[in-house]
Length: 246
View 1 (cartoon, rainbow, N blue to C red):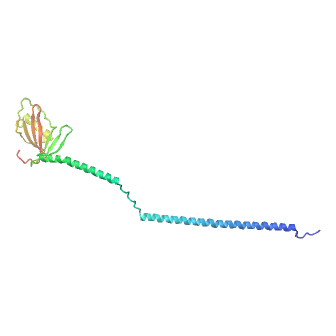
View 2: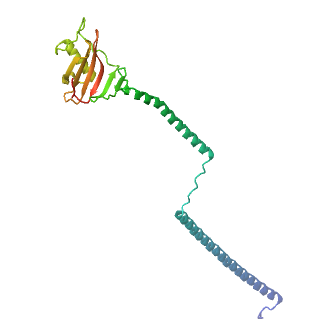
View 3: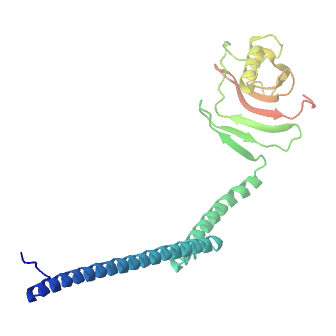
């Protein structure tokens, strides 16, 4: 039996060379792959660090800007006033001035007329019942004001025939005078004080001085007789005092 020695032939050498080349190429490929992996890791790591640094810088800058805005608030400039605005304001001022002047000029003749009137008219009312009520001031020491109402009507009468004014304190004519005084003053007849009822300077005229029971309300009423209709109030003085000759 023949023993076989090592194969040092050309074919053997080629096989060994191919195996060495394959192993060497594989090792080179592994080394290159490792280099690529390491390089990629380093590059990506640097990008992450730069991005984090940029974000921190932006956050810090934003906080600084916000702090500056808080410490130093911005005052917006007021819009410029155009010439048209001034013209509108001038026109409005002239309008108000004209209205005020018109009111003054309109009221002046009225005031001058009131100075010429001896009894100045303070105001006139028109009650719902109809007719105006005129209030006159007075310089008399005992009169607060004088009232004349167009709404006053004759109170009616039960008398017939030719009228004769009576001051006897009991006749129908006397009682109707009291009713007319209560009607003019608005005081309840049963609680009024009839201090004086007297002739008014004419057979068909009378004057009554009356007050409330506590004498807080005091009046002097002028009456006139209307045939067939009774006594009618024509004027009433609101009195300041009862301390005068009735």
